[in-house]
Image (cartoon, rainbow, N blue to C red):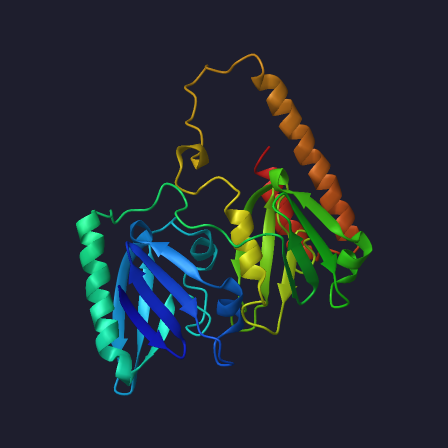
Length: 294
């Protein structure tokens, strides 16, 4: 067993698993404490490095693409302090950190772990039920249903629409984005057959403008992403195009149904525009996207 123990947390390599335990001090980021202990199997690891400075250093772990639902929705979007796959290392633990890096690399190579993306999630998602409140809404997920309740900071259009309930079957994707510059952070659920609009008016989107990471919204995003088709499975790939003249008997009806759905959505967009929910630019962009489907 190889261990690096610091006030920021502990990393322990034991029997093919790297256990990551966040510290308990006030300086340890709330998101890492909320995520809790992680057990990372060697087959989920893409690489590991130790960046050594004069007085302190940092361990960094890279996971294979598609190995962890949390990393899948947050990769390259977290601060160093909130990233669970990083560890601040004091000078007196430099030697242990270097040794851990060597051991992980050796054991990973011995196990023949591939460098490419994982075909399935190798780590479990955050446990449900989960609830997170940030900015204009509170979102909860029980494993099958997403519920969004608006706060007083929500736009009038969201408050007028009231609480939103989405079944997991109606969601085709989840997008989590922290605050970037002057742009608010957001947690958006992409619904089947519905084009997204501006985040502040989207009834399937929670936004925030204070906490960079939006509290624990990323945990909700990861829990939902884990229950959607994996990004690297064959079932998640778009279907192959049919050859010319290969249309089946139901093709004409499907085309007609799609035309009706687009026309219905155009009418809905017009209502939103007239009601002031969409400005001219948003309405024009959404309208053009729909017209391209005809």
